[in-house]
Length: 345
Image (cartoon, rainbow, N blue to C red; front, side):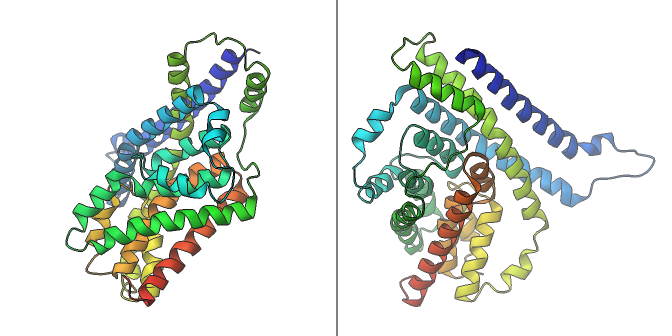
């Protein structure tokens, strides 16, 4: 089977899965249109709220997913493995700092970062360097810094703490995961990808039959429908949590430094907000929760949230994802609590 036929089979499968899932959710949320008027059946307001939140998350995330898959496709077509190895320091720990600095340059949110990191790791980037980029880029980029500034312009401590912690903790998290995995392959490879990988390695010097622009669009489309399935599923689950989670119970323990930090981290995970907009949501909790817990919300959410978790489980091995979530959770919680104990925030 030639490479083009393999690609279109893979694309068709991902596209079909994306469309079927989207159609199911459209029918699910618009069931009120088909209700039996005689029976007096109506959809509860809570489910209509799920519909609104779900659409809000998807509409907010899709532009960034598109950005991510196009960057991923450009990396696939234009970036060779030798280039990545040439520019990265040979020492594993020395490579952590450039990865964090790189994360401060690109305006990429957590919705778009998964396909980019996945592609970079496939291209030969060390796993721990990819992890640093995964957790740093959604926070350190200029767009997030600007939104945090406007949301907390009366208390810039939140801005400085968010950016400083994200930079330092991303390096620490990358270092810990290097110690655990030593850059062993943690990606999930599909049968089509493994066959394609062997073909590329065997015919690397052969002339390309398709021009690079077409290849970029083909890869971007394939990646979009592959990622889109998991985005929709994650957005739906996040909408359910946002609607049915009893926030009043959690807010009742919001004044304690320890418990409020844990609660706001849980909020950040379940709400699955885009990092470009989460600062304004955090600011609305300013009168209920401590400053430290707000910072935990702003640091933890972009590093790992519910929709991100589903995407990670789809493309990385389960053991890696579980350890990654555990390390990020522990490091963020301990660092924020320590800063509060030392009265630095």
